[in-house]
Amino acid sequence: MSNMLLVLGCAFFAGGVHHKEQSFNKSGVTTNASLLCLGVMGMSLPSALHATDTEIAGTVSEVSLSRYSSCLLLLMYIVFLYFQLVSHKEYFEEEKDEDEEDEESELGFWEAIYYMAAITICIALLSDYIVDTIEGAAKGWGCPVSFVSVIILPIVGNAAEHASAVMFAVKNKMDIAMGVAVGSATQISLFVIPFCVLVGWAMDKPLDLNFHVFETLSLAITVLTVNFVISNGRSNWLKGLVLTLAYVILAASFFCHAEPPQNGLSSSSKILIN
Image 1 (cartoon, rainbow, N blue to C red):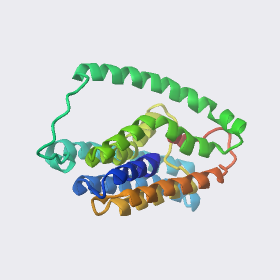
Image 2: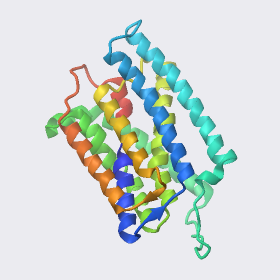
Image 3: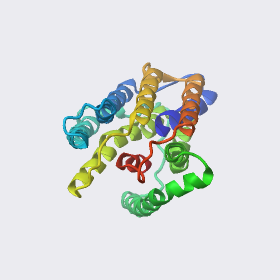
Image 4: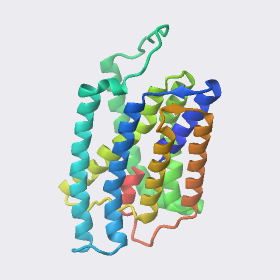
């Protein structure tokens, strides 16, 4: 939600201030948008099953449905990679001007891999620490756990993505900015979350996709709003302002939202925080 509303909104706004109207590859973006809708469906149905109290076998039904959906979402992500990198790669290529010169890379391939691996290990350790301390931090700040995990942490954690998306938008490289914002959200919904569920399955942990009704509805509205905004393949500062204010409204709603009483964070909440 942070990537789709705040990051994309700021990129549209910053780019729109410097350019009256910007365009991006509509085919690639709509493909990502349709996959986001699929991801939302996979995460919505376990929540709906729990909310309507219609499970055949109690929470076992939610876990089974979540694992089945996760397998299909991961399969869809693999197919999407083939679609993006092989069969329809022109949908995701940046449109270059004839007068535009290619920028020289500052890092070599293996040097970049080394830095990414080192940073990934550090982030994994820090993420584990954050999950263990987030409840105490929320109590100390006097705000709901969901507000800290869904609003505060993504703003800090996505600082690099946020800055790069805005920078590319100002340079009128909207396809790259869209890939940073919408592309990463697609990766999270189709790969990261389903993969976590399957890892939990392998560890005999009942991890499910039940994010509860309020969180799931917020995600669905976010994807719907972004789909409307990017549907014509053009952006301006007003669209950016719409997405940014939508994130502000979302933040206010999570600040007023109290999670149901439970012993510690739920499995789905821990996925959301990570």
